[in-house]
Length: 93
Image (cartoon, rainbow, N blue to C red; front, side, top):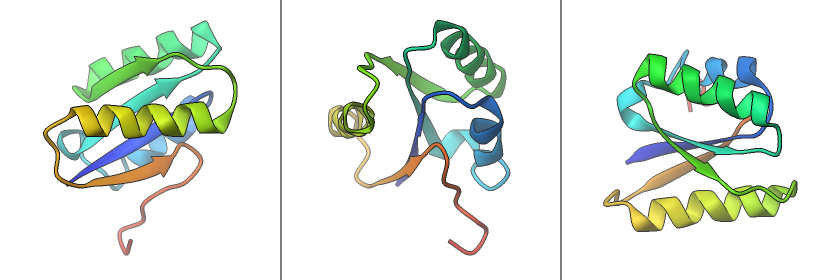
């Protein structure tokens, strides 16, 4: 099982994910129209050694969520917990 985090525009919210998630169990999907944010998110993922994917955005939430599903289905992971960038997994679930 791996956690798939969808991020679009807020680096602090992305960083917050790694308070409870480890880089090894996490995949970050960067789906944004903001090229500056995209660069920041890529650099942060590289610093942590987190697997990340950049997907094409049209600015709607559905496009990003579908991108996460496509990446999961193309992976060898058996289970996926999808997390929107503004949500967080707490130590209790």
